[in-house]
Length: 369
Ligand SMILES: NC(=O)c1ccc[n+]([C@@H]2O[C@H](COP(=O)([O-])OP(=O)(O)OC[C@H]3O[C@@H](n4cnc5c(N)ncnc54)[C@H](OP(=O)(O)O)[C@@H]3O)[C@@H](O)[C@H]2O)c1
Image (cartoon, rainbow, N blue to C red):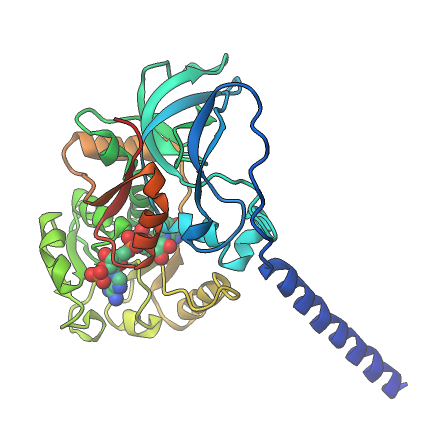
């Protein structure tokens, strides 16, 4: 009887291993890049398209059909877009868990880009929030293209006065992420001390300014060449990580917003008071297989071992948060630090630039004059 059970157990384990290995092979397999389908008659536009996962070489400038808005959608003529690490993840299909929604073997949606700013050029029959000619910014699939369509009640808002298209396009993903990390996860209050690790990147440059606008005393961590940039954004203190390791210092921070994940959670716990909060926004990508589960596990263990709160952020894009950013910008409390401008055909170079990990603020794509 015992031997039978052991055989059954071994059989089930072997089946489990074969099942996991098969799933792994299926999920990580890259299908070849297909060719563009024939173009139907009608109006066309230029857009960056990818038909298979891989490095920036898979991105091609193609002529595709101009989209028509559904009854609850607006169509926007895109004047500027911006690049985010998110685009790189969709382009490469990594971490692999992302392929469960983005497409196994090849992407289901062939357009790329999220952040946009432009002018509404058509509205669906049921749309009352916007009209043709409105200047808007937000998040939508396919922002690396001349036109996008998106639901009018979603992540789109009127552009703040005094901001140009590139400034507005630079904000959505990175600044909403910074806002949700500081306001919703860390619940920053005036007078608290906030450390921003990765202060010179896309999210960090906005986080420094939003933390200041929320009344915090802000310390930004960056490398030597970015010290002046971070100071110019309003940081009260700047730590150059090439000479000083804040995680080994004496100073305690009520809140740490971490875009880099290059310190152990144990070390970060040492530089926070007992009621401190760490918000993990980004981290060094250890494995395409285990992310983001490894990070979630580490944060859960740290929460059990230490008195502080260890939170992970997964930002969600919505209209009210874009309006909150527009309000900060109108009051002169928020501006994008723009690193480099690329044109639409140069999107592959823009993504390669982002993938160096050395962007200073935002990389933007100028699409229309
Ligand atoms: N959880 C979410 O919902 C969410 C949303 C948006 C982004 N993210 C993640 O957040 C992370 C940051 O995004 P991002 O748009 O800010 O990326 P990014 O613009 O590409 O960040 C580049 C910046 O990181 C800095 N950096 C690199 N190593 C550093 C270190 N050891 N210490 C301090 N700074 C360092 C670089 O400065 P130097 O050149 O000076 O080193 C550079 O300015 C990414 O991992 C991204 O995937 C998460």
